[in-house]
Length: 155
Image (cartoon, rainbow, N blue to C red; front, side):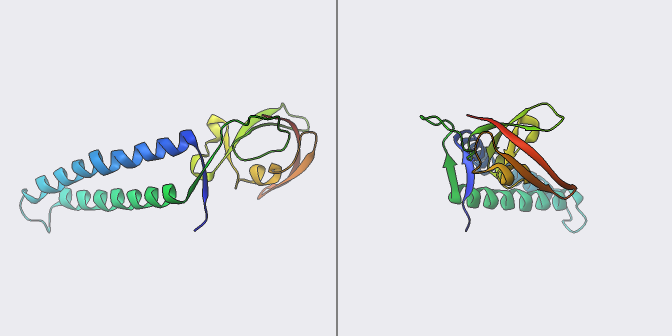
C-alpha cells in the first residue's frame, strides 16, 4: 500500500469527516431505511432503494477514508530551517515566461485543490518541480504539451 501525503490540517479534516460518517450519517441512513421498511412493499419502494444505495455509498466512503488515513504520511507544514528545494508541504512560487508568478502549496492528492492554491505532488506541475531548487527552470509535461516554469521562491 502506497503512503499518501497529507498535511496535519488535511489529516484532521479527513478524520473529522470519517467520524461524522460513522456517527451522524450512518444513523441518518439507518433511520431512512427503517422508515422506508415501514412504508409497505419493499420491492416497489423507491425510498427504500434510495436509502440502500446511500448506505452502500456511505459505507464505501468510510472504508476509503479508513484506508487513506491508515496509510497517510503526515507532512510538516513548516520547516525550522531555510529551504530552497521544493518538497511536499512547502509553498513554492513559480513563473511561466510571459505570465505573472503564482504560488502553490504542494500537498498529497487527497488534499489537492487548485482554487485554494494547493496542488498535488502527483500533478504535472507538482511532479515537475519536486526536488528542484530556487532559480531552476523545469519542463512541465501535460497532456496539452510541454512548457517551462522557473522556481522563484520556496518557503
